[in-house]
Image (cartoon, helix red, strand yellow):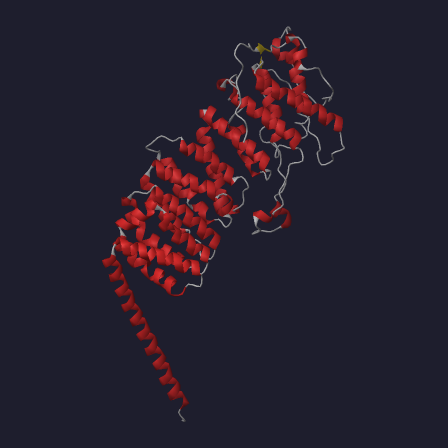
Length: 481
């Protein structure tokens, strides 16, 4: 995780970097954005073209060594700052490590200096400088992402775990650009009234598009930055939630592929954690339309932990949602995927931990019918995970309150396990659960046992009758015509 950004030390007074004096003031500054004209509009959707008093110029930037900002007079720092930002806007080809080594190193040093400048808070940037810096950041980070590993191979249902991990070759520079953006967003010197002109809706939407990057290092920065933007810029909050919803919808109904889904869910978990109660209807719809349908994806294990946390947080905020969640999970229950079944059973147990008896009563019948099927699963890990529910004190309390409904449902699966499950551990666990029910209500257990024996007798009689009928048919068929 990224370190907490420290503020300005007490006693140090920031120096304001002013534009150089001139007949027309700041508007005489001409800025050359070398890399902007070379980037197609389709690849760069958020490069602004209307900075204050700025005119466009051809690609004439020269990458050269310049003095440090702290080593020049205050009156010259504005021009030098713009010059350094302009050089940092030049893009390089990092696929060839031996190409333009000197220029790349100069850019890296300039980026480090800008990061230190914003981090220390030793110099206050005016509006023009902030605009130029954000434009430079946009040029560097808003780019076309390479095809995903599964797109290169053409595999549709490939396992993401088997895909090669992608590492962005330009990361030595890109990391510094992200660090600069992060320091700028969290700096106490950054006035949201001014910076929201540059960190606008388009900028935020482009940040969200970058979560499709397969480089985990980049997504970690994006996650931290977007979380800080959400906390600092209230004007962006509805947009962020709506845009994340759209990403999820595309994942659910179209692609089922998105490397940053877990990171986006972490951001949402933080948002949900800070919600006031009673919650808005928006979040209940989000639960029904987005979070629950996310369970149907094949590779849910890559984001299930974050998804489960979001759902549990919502149920904690409003316990009445428990019934909706449990029925939703049952709707998307996997048919032949033991790994997903184990995840679902674990999530249900977490939801039951925050479920009240009234909501439990509404869904306990379909819930324990499914649990009964899991108890009888030939996959011993699924059966084991289901039987582990009886190790949870809160779950056992709920079961005990409604044992007259639950025990008749799961008595038969338990008996079948005890009598003939292939795994000895499952036999033992099933026997332990039987003992717990006997201690809860011996009379009810005996009644269920008698009903089970009667049912077994009827089934055996029907089987014998069927065998007898077949023998009669065979006898008739064997008689000579």
